[in-house]
Length: 189
Image (cartoon, one colour):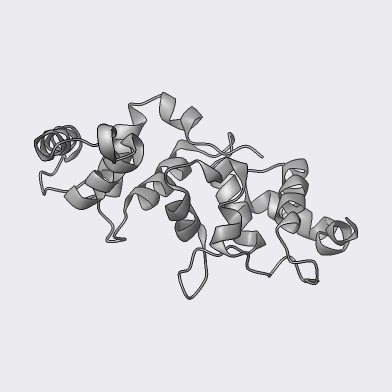
């Protein structure tokens, strides 16, 4: 595609590499994948905002139970519609890359799980989290008593200051004791 070279000159490529956890090859591949989502008539691919519904068609996100939250967390759109420009898309891929630090991964995981965007994981956030992970419908949904017990257990383990919520530092403390977290929190193009 001819636009790749004109949109990503060497200077931009180097800058993107400095600002992300991605290699030059990964950035070029990301731009190729992003460009495939652009309307045919679009000439300014870097700043164009791909609608969330188009981003969610990527196989890497299509089956992720948090796909809409991921788009909304990484979107810099003023309308909070989950649309992504190329910088947003790179930030997403960078945070989910193998090279991203535990601190970065846990920060973004926390934001994704904070459904009400209040800076803490309260009971409603934890219930939505559990429902996303279990499918939350039919045979896979927990009874209200099971859900309450599970959330009580999560808070007992995680809520160090006993305020009834999990803040970012408490979440990061829990994640630091989970070696599988880093390897499971990734998206590979």
